[in-house]
Amino acid sequence: MRMEAVPTPSGAGVTIQNRLAGPEKGSERLLVLLPGNNYSCDAPAFFYLKQAAVQAGWDVLSTAYAFQLTGGEVDGPAMLADVRAALDEVLPRGYREICIAAKSLGSAIALPLARSLAGYRVSLLILTPVPQFLTEPVGDLRTLVVIGTNDPVYHMTECGAARKRADAEWAVIPGLDHGFNVPGDWKASAAALEQVIAPCVRFLAGPAGR
Image (cartoon, rainbow, N blue to C red; front, top):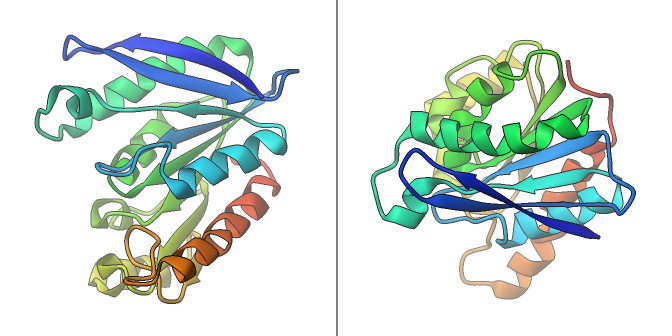
């Protein structure tokens, strides 16, 4: 596996140490990981998704947000700017297809990021979305949403309305909470990771995004 540092200056005055992983021969496909507030790109679901994606021939850009380094407030426009700056560092490598994988808070900027990538085939892989993501139709963006039945968001009206729109594919996993854990059962939590990653891998192997 090829590993590279992608240091990216932020408007908050700090340099974010983003990372790019991929097959040794390079790739024309890029998976961009947008972490959650307390769910980094090294947390279990993203860790194994990254391994699976690289094995399938994708480059993977692991990102972070300046507020996580400075201890500042969550700022959506600043998060989007941080990630777009990291993307701009690697896009000259000639990618043709981009999949944006967002966990929780990261899903709030997934759609605007996707829409900023005119000229690329883009798809969305959304893990445990926040309500903000669910309120806006994804249009023609090929999208998979992965969520557990013990995630409070799953029981919100926004989630029900989004599922009825039928503009995205859904993988609903029984018993998992917002962190993709089975509360109080570490063995079941570890075993459930395959149920989270398998639909993501199938999605990445499918047709390219719009």
